[in-house]
Length: 104
Image 1 (cartoon, helix red, strand yellow):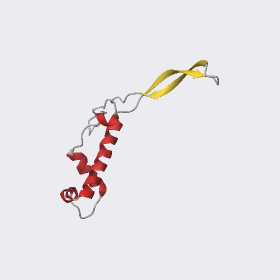
Image 2 (tube, one colour):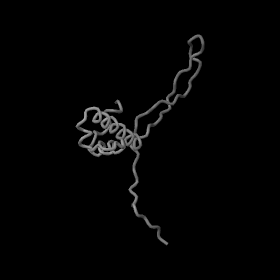
Image 3 (cartoon, rainbow, N blue to C red):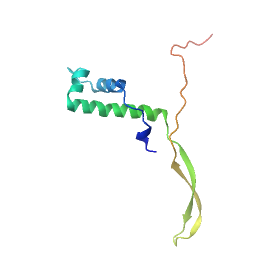
Image 4 (cartoon, one colour):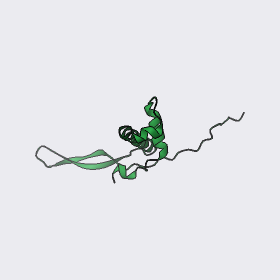
């Protein structure tokens, strides 16, 4: 399955954060979204932010696969192991308290 099919949809929060990352002086979010060129830039940046968030929580895995090794004549010379990309799996996130004070 292609990675883009696994990505969550864009949210309003992604669009807001993308607009804030642009640092456009004199532009409000509503006026930038009304402008076609700036709206496209915001949506593009929002896709990038969303994808980076998803990739941070779904690291790529590698799988070892046995492959046949051929000699110069095309005959089987032996076997080798090759690392290939595996599926992306979700990394469990720890729920840590924000204002943790260690016990004495």
